[in-house]
Image (cartoon, rainbow, N blue to C red):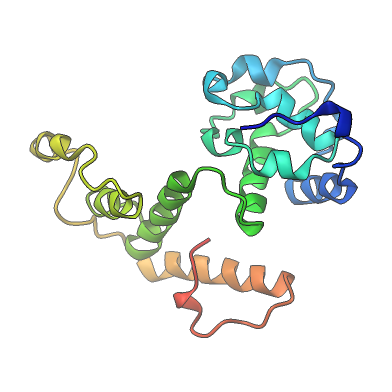
Length: 205
């Protein structure tokens, strides 16, 4: 991914982006002084296009396009290590989650396979009340256009009881599905959109 040209930082600055991230995450990002604890705590830093500490600085500089198109926000495992070690008590993991949500709304997701996994994961939870791995993985692999990935592992996992042919029967699955619907209604209400009909046909959260 092309890095931001620091000489054009003022031209690409979006002050509204800073406010939007702070309001959505509930964090005061001006308190971040780039100590690097979040970056040092992150086990996936080696795979990021921008380390966490740089993501935080880019937000402070209003670099909306660079941040929302980065792969780092999607590779974050939300392990909370960065949040735990932040000396200013900034919930960095929450900021990363906020950026993922914003990236989806802006249609700037840089790793479509990860978005596909998120979609199928949530759809599985909505349908069964919890993740049904045996159903999730084949559907995800088809959407990611790699249907035979890890297929050789399935027999061994089934024999060891790590995968099952049928989903677990979770009580009050309808209640869990209703949570998705309530959140979806709230989202459309905040965006000033009319409620879609039927609501269940819309993309999951």
